[in-house]
Every structure is written in structure tokens, then in C-alpha cells.
Length: 74
Image (cartoon, rainbow, N blue to C red; front, top):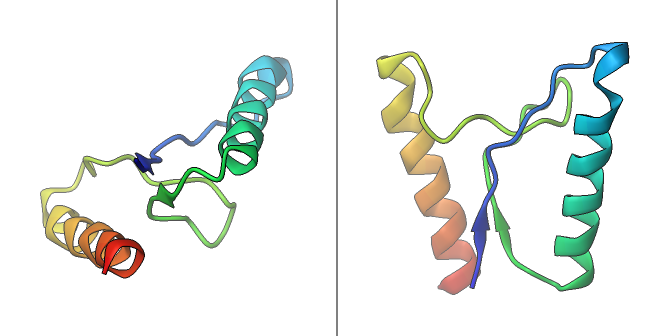
């Protein structure tokens, strides 16, 4: 099994619990050697939402995810 990641967290000082939860979740996935698929933002290391708000970006997102899946399961 694999997991599609689309979880970014705003970096506000009072929102530390969300960031900590995300880091723990990613650590557990790594420990379990669960394959991860997701479109990573280069600027901040967060993952794009699986359904981009801009319709024009959706096809490109799907293409990227399909390529990742094929590379892992090819």
C-alpha cells in the first residue's frame, strides 16, 4: 500500500501542535517503510493539496502523481 500526501501546515507560532502532528505522522510512515506519493513544494517542504484550487493546475498535478506511482510500482 501507498499513501498520497497532501498535507501542508501554515507556520504560525501558536499552531505548533499541527506541525508536530505532521512530523510524527511522517516519521511513522518512514519507520513503516510506507511508500509516499505527493507533490512537494520546493520552497517550504510542504505537500500540495491533491485537488489544486486552480483548475488549470489540476491536470499537471495528476500527471505528476501518476508518474510517481508508476515509478514506484513499475
